[in-house]
Length: 283
Image (cartoon, one colour):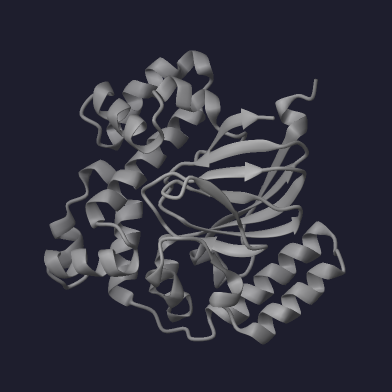
């Protein structure tokens, strides 16, 4: 029988270009060798993907069916889960954009939808065609990542203006202990009222500041717990309360709300090296 480690390989890389270091958290190179069903967990990021070989499908829960994902696309920042079906082998790059990419004009189309969106709806057509042509030559991994960074620098920063107030708020929420963040203090630092901040979040992120802080707090706690061996999880659950949870039941409620799982089962279900993808079924 094929082991989980053999089925899935995930390598993490970090941006090298100075412009992207403040905009991209990391790149994840996924290699999946067998059919798999997974579910995303809210992570406070704008995820994008580039399929190098193979494909996958997203599930539309309202219509109770799967639909094919574009070969390159964005998944908008969300506080809900999405089920993904990988029917065959897949090699893809996952780009984890920090949320303030939504303050850049180039991604304005993302603000108008809650569904996935292909790169062709966001990026300059000529630049995208050039990037696709390069990928068809099947370059080595290092050259692929370098070409990706060149492409992102040319397209994302084509119009370098951004919403400075939104960037300030998001960075403040990310860098603070999420549980202790006061929305009023964040708004004041950005020189706006709380109501203005709430409207800006709903318009550009699709969620409220409170929900965003809740996602940040949950992800910080999960990552903190993953750094320890399973034998230390009980102690870690207590230590993680420093992220703003009142007690263990408070954290458990968030775990159930975001994933439908208890913390114990959640930690057992993550894909290796991730805190935002759960294995639901191996075919």
